[in-house]
Length: 72
Image (cartoon, rainbow, N blue to C red; front, top):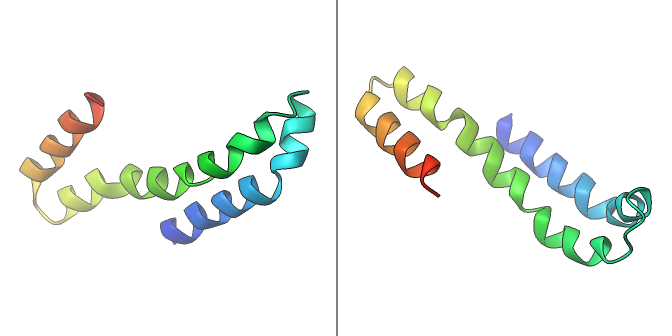
């Protein structure tokens, strides 16, 4: 479900890039938004990783991920 939501958001950003650029009065934004549209795909999955690892009784992996993620 989370992967589907990430892909849906990516598609919406990609298809709506011209409209989004017009809303911000920045025509150059439409050229950059296709790259940014990949971001939700990865963001949604990483948001639930910690919960999954804790549910699988892997607190060490969860802690390592949280430390690594916050140092990026």
